[in-house]
Amino acid sequence: MVAYGIYFGAANSIQQIAADAARTAIAGLNQSERQTLVASFVTNNASGYPFVDASKLTYQANDSTADGSQFVVSIQYDARNLPIWNLFPGLAMPGTTIKRQSTIRIGGI
Image (cartoon, rainbow, N blue to C red; front, top):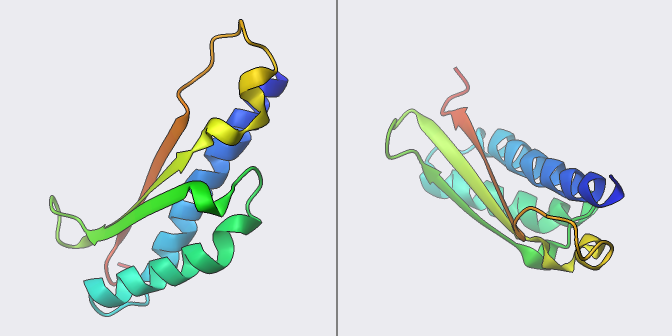
């Protein structure tokens, strides 16, 4: 339970970073401004989330190709450094990469 609790805590933090970055991006007038806002948010805030090493995080932030009225922030986190992998070697564990995304409507409508 401890190992999965740590993993789910990290996954929740990654989802929250994606959601918070997307909400921050809503202030941008175009894709370039939104991407700059996301980059600034991630750089300044990612290390403040539980179980997250900001240097292991990558992200993409783009207008949706499926729906031009939406903006998508996708986060990938290399979770190999979480302490859970060596706690219980025989326990089946999820993958070492956590991927989450958040979508927000451009213009906030």
